[in-house]
Length: 540
View 1 (cartoon, rainbow, N blue to C red):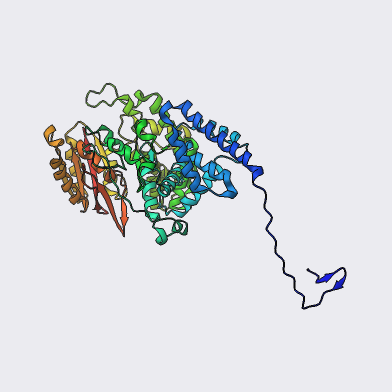
View 2: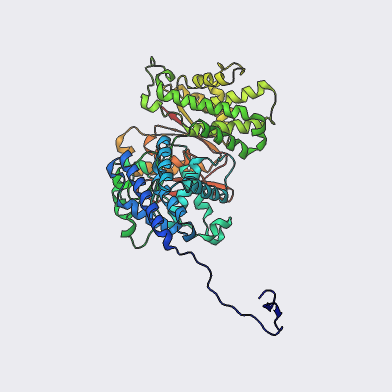
């Protein structure tokens, strides 16, 4: 046919060849037994591992149902094992908090897959693809916690499977949700990756201690657990995937887990604590997001601070008594609270402030300036305990022995710098002395800034009534929109309603920031936050 000849003799030009044939197909029946065996073995091993390492009620047939939904959504007949890999990853693997248990689980899965794939390779590839499609602002690191959060939220929004994200403050739970919500705009999405998926319409509700049982909760879901109204009882039937004809995606975010009756109705993502290498990678990623030159010139300092924080946290856990003065009678904090007094959010802001100060000082090379920047960054983020700053500096000095005098610490200078810096976190001052209010007033007046004080009532009848909270919160939302310093005292009952504001978990609309304020069973409203607004909480 190609030479247009037959047995060596040429064929006339007007003779044309027309052929019909079926494409070559491999008989898939030879793979069926192998595939079914891998699937059955892998699912059984995953299910058994979770049941053996957790409460017997932590897994049920609901996991199998969710796995089948995910498998169908991921399904690709050419990459059958990839679909199974991703489904098991989401249903079983991401709930493991302990990193050692995760390692054991991975080994079990790779054995059940006959070592044909590396268990984490495919999920990591997709996680990075999603993170690339999401627009990350300066100061946000693409660490493991953020990648897992983005992946789980993205998949659960598309499959309508309920998702519970449980982790300590500062592990990117709320941030990840906002990034996905902002990115998934259907065909109008800024990145082509999301244009193939539906637009997400969100109904946000933030739990608070005054929550009632008339709604389903998302952010700070754990706060509703302490409400005397037991509001979470209503979500059981709403979260049953097969019982609701009209399926709505549900994302619950909390700092601590709920009971099994709620958790096993959805996918459970538990965020492990970062190890030392995780912290170093995160610090360098944050620095690089501001300017790659920071990593080139000051990499060693970021590594020292990361290792110091890791050692500091180990010290808090194992010997917390060394961080407070037990002879004090004015202020005592239980040991269990001291162990979690500082967390990853403090570490992230330590790195952010360090990066900003290096840039503001035009990338200094003088040792004295670098040392001052390092000390200021530590002092502004690790105060609060009697010896917390002293202990952190000591741990830092064991790594960076040539650092200048670490004993100097001016708390009022830290307060002043915080109020001046419109990008820094809001200030919490813990003190028994009434003179603190006078000193704060003097600092604010010295900066020529407007200020307003809001004091709460000590009467239970006031703190438990919705109208009292509404009155105070109305004043707060007015102050938020002004160039002012707002000082709050004795308002603990309504602080949970302001968690979005305190966490600076803002939503961007144009060039303006908006924060949610939640109150009881009313709709959560977004209120504008002035760029120069500052907040100070006085705590006794």
